[in-house]
Length: 610
Image (cartoon, rainbow, N blue to C red; front, side, top):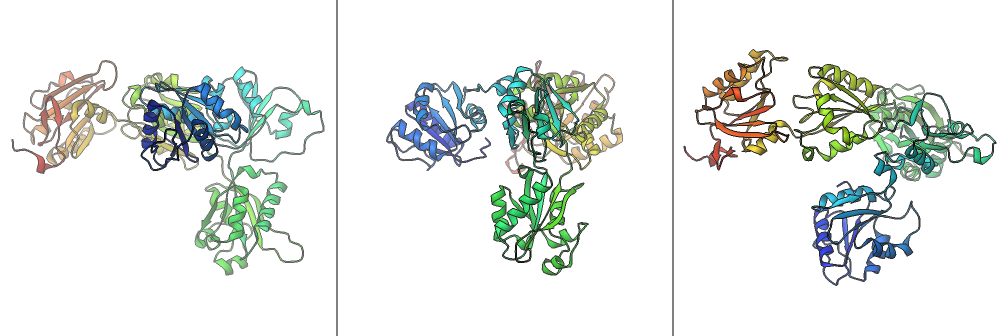
């Protein structure tokens, strides 16, 4: 489970609740704190609190933890929580679990408090438990504006309600931020509106993605502007800072804030302060970063000196070994293609010389390409990370038959770009082009995206201007091996027998090498109507080094409808029973059949003499 905040308080009053509580405490030992109500020890993780009444336990957990799991009836939990509530932005998220552990109910703080995410995590940890989330956006499969990991301003509730109700909502992106899929009533416009412009008059609602600061409002009636616009603030800016020894946090903070304001940029879009390594321990810089709510990143002087800047200076070169600190650090922090939007400027202090400089750079907009392995086919073998990436994407690209497996997991409004067999390069180019256009793209394939799948053709096309994320999946070899027993217990190799992309001479050389090295071999793409001789030839090559009784596993449609598992031998395998939906695993000289299952010992010293 991802627990980005502080401890999770666990409160229970019954024996069944304590058992479930202890299960969570054992599963998340570094994230939970037990609040006992029975006079016992409160679990085994060492984080138990002194026992008290249920009311006392809930009250303590409420003030000491960021999230709570209460193993209580919802009515009792509501009555205990009611006197403690202060506000949506400050109250912890609360999940309520019933006596039979059938449901984990996100009761309070669904998004802001993290209760929705926690309900899903609790349900995964408790067998047979199901999450209950009633937040409207979650229930409708629409991303909540406050769940995108970005600062959000304006009338978020009104715009979210409009999205849910199917009312027209304009999407204005000053920054090509890759957003999850939004429903069809959200339509993008390419105008150059500011926050005040999109909210003033004209009706309708607007979702604005920008790092620009608001312009002065047009003096019209408040009701004509209010409740119309929500603003997402992507972290596109880096502020480079140079400072003399002893520069105060006040001077640095004022310089940064004034520089951003005069450039019309929002402080909420600043990702970090950047400076030279020699200033890593400068108290004024550290405190300024704390006030701005961002981290400090430092770079070696040599790295900064290599960055071309418009305003180099001899002073920092003499002091720290680089002709630029502020401009070079800002540009370096923003990476390839960064734009310097505020050149170096000095602080202004009455009666003495400036002790600080700053510059602001903007990151080049980057799309996002997730390479997602869907596993062998069974829904329960699709990883949670793959599910998350499918929900995060606004565009999903893949083979039509694979996309059919996961359409129900996609958010409403997701663009699905399907193609047929044999179009791997076309799919890769399409996915990369969509990511370059600033979209959040998932390129899907079966098994693992990097094993005989879409990752390699996509990465061959992908420039460094997009973010690429690999999402592992369960491969066909692993799914088949789990059904066969433990055939991959020692060194093994996978070889595709398809000669559509690889000359047969190369494939044969690899099979010979595997045979001579006594490796367990898994054959992918073993046989088709047009390729019926390659598998018999490969088996003959292995037979030159392995006895006829060597175990062989044949798995067709692993984890899918029509699954068939057969354990036979090298001498008895009928190649005619194999097709493209089959994985063939041939054991090595140590592999044995035990109770009908293939087993390859982990080491030869454990091998019994035949």
